[in-house]
Image 1 (cartoon, one colour):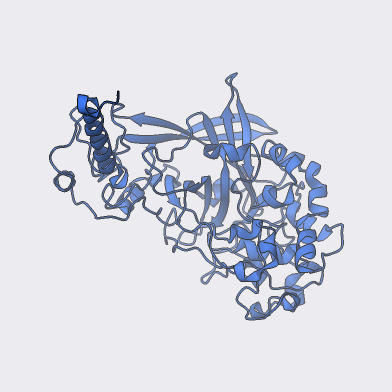
Image 2: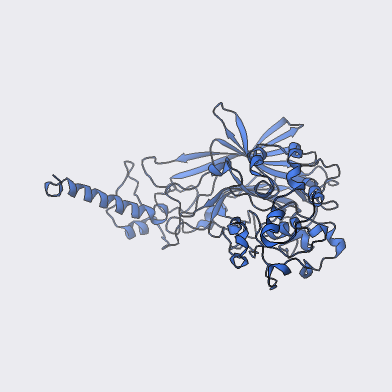
Amino acid sequence: MTAAISNSGSGRKGVATLICGALAAGGLTAAGVAVLAPGTANASSHREAPLISGTPQYDNTDFYAFVSPDHPDTTTIIANVIPFEEPGGGPNFYQFAEDAQYDIRIDSNGDAKEDLVFRYTFKTNVKNRKSFLYNTGVVDSLYDPDLNVTQTYDLTLIKEKDGRVEHETKLADDVPVAPSNVGKASMPKYSKLRDQAIYKLSNGAKTFAGQADDPFFADLRVFDLLYGGDLSEVGRDTLKGYNVNTIALQVPNDLITESKNQPIVGMWSTIQRENAQGYYEQVSRLGSPLVNEVVNPIKDKDKFNASKPKDDGQFLKNVTNPELPKLIEAIFKIKAPAEPRNDLVDVFLKGVKGLNQPPYVTPSEELRLNTSIKPAKSPKRLGVLDGDNAGFPNGRRLTDDVIDASLQVVEGELVGSKNDLGDAVDKNDKKFENYFPYIALPTAGSRGKTAKSAADTKSALGDGLTTTSENTPLIAASAGAGAAGILLIGGALMWWRRMQRPSYRRH
């Protein structure tokens, strides 16, 4: 999402004082600034293009890649889909699409073509189709018979050369997906379900798929024409309380890098959807955050989602002549940097020279990571912009404040317009985990009473519960929604029967 404008907690007053000696708190020198810069106005891609906004199962929302803090010989890659998941969105909760390929693509040599593809494909199983319930009782494990709707996935590694498949290897088969967090009554120990969904591969890698708290933090009310110039509006994390579906993969660095002498990899995620002819078409693409949302105009958004990095030259003008600085100038009277914006081009298409730019790079939009840089003991939210070379735009960590870092650069940080701009949302509403997959647990659909067992739930709801033809008790539904639904249905039936009596019929 785009960035709002605020003083980033600096305490300064007024728009006129927003542009000043930026990053003083970080103590950056002129020499330090010369070797940093996020890409263009980047952040998350939620509902970033007209076509994909109507099909959330196929919509990449965020993409992260970072050297694993507790296993620095590995890289963790996270791809999120399905934006703005309302936690209580039952009785049909959130699933990966079965007619899609969810890909993580790796460019090991900087030629703008994928060398490796990690492909996730999903299957859905329903135990009892005569029930409307997501779970028919308290769920204690991923294999619990009361978890009525489940998903599994296959993971395949595809090796390519010059756009052609050389070899495919099945890395995992029928791995269970962590379910949507219905609520405490249905899933009293959700963290246990999360841990059970972490799967270790034979090559030392780990994989996970399931629901998570949306790790992106930003004030999205900025789309109201930058708050209409009212800076008192900033500072609320609009994504607080929403979930996403997450694919996470932790792989040895030597699996994805070209060599020890060339440790820089480019990465991005794509989703292909099966069309009516049975072929898979790419419908979503995400590397560096927010590129398609803010950099590309509406006429190019769907085209970008279907494109490949090797063809990114067609979008060059969107980078050299960005719209966002002009909008900020019109509303806040902050002068836009002179065009063409060549200061953005190198980083946007190549990576930062001396940090995460491959030696023979072909210009293309990818999230680039130097896997030889060790994780920071105390990560700084502005990443490289604040002297922390282990952070954005050298990959992207969950804690990186890509909104503030990107806005400062797009407003001319590298061409003499020092500034301290941001949206006043500096961290996620939930703390991240210290171990894979690192993302925070999803917000529960209901925060009601925790049930210790199916028997306790049945006792709490009463013994007169309807049962299915398979004699499955209708209990602990959708975070208590099932119980309410049963009462509503029962009440409706009683009302209907009364209306059929002669004394209630209208003449």
